[in-house]
Image 1 (spheres, helix red, strand yellow):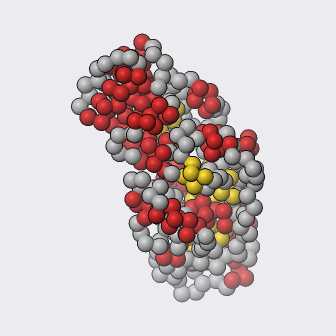
Image 2: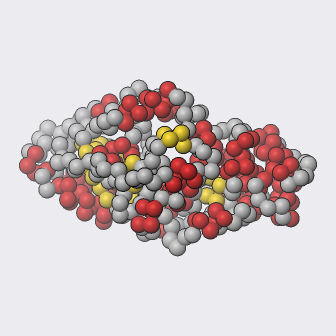
Image 3: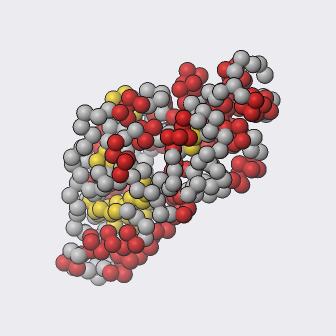
Length: 361
């Protein structure tokens, strides 16, 4: 963060800014914006308890950075407010439930079927920060989109953008949960919005009950080591064999706990062209994707969140999906073509999948 300028504007000039910020945010493609103090409240203790249980698995970075993850003023000294924004990402038209029920179709979480959102949102947030600076100069701004240790859902809830549901997703009563979050940390003492303190999940526990791998220990408590998103994206080694049959055709992430949520009937289709499906990733067959060469994988996932899992991880995930698919000629032939893959991890998952179909490598 740069040094503050010498002549900051007087606080009265900031009073009208929140509504202007919301309007500028909408012009830039954000669905909403809210402002809060740099305080995550009780979420800091909940994070520490979660880490102490080891629920983070191999995501050791969740415990790094000291208190910076839950104390915005430690991450960026001088922060007086946090501007939180959300951007819808659900493609339209889209029928994710149909893809899930077709066991030969590869299911990719809907946030990853298009281009990666990080660069697009960071650019828009930088533009928003410049507009604020032009209106009221003398303050500092720093934008984040998963680029630093930030408890973004906690800050968004405290900025009035929704409540944190039992599945740990931020839920907006008029927009569901299919949206990305981003933040601007600023030294400007802007008026703050009321926190969204009321949870509207009620007695509903559909999201907890539908989880294919029983990853929820209870409401608001996820054991990431059992979560399909963790298994297909964060885990770098072999997927635990008892969990593989439960993964079905989900090869990158999982949306089940969102798709079942009654509030997502209010989800808005995204207007962003970059978030529309690319290379048929919303409805391609497992066998087709499994036969991509590494060169094809790198080309077709350029600018995509799928790159995070790497080519070997991609084949590992698809092998599991093929092991759970019906025993058809395309499924079996695709697996046989990878039975001697140079990666030991890929081979192990392919051989497991072939045994599922009553075959040996």
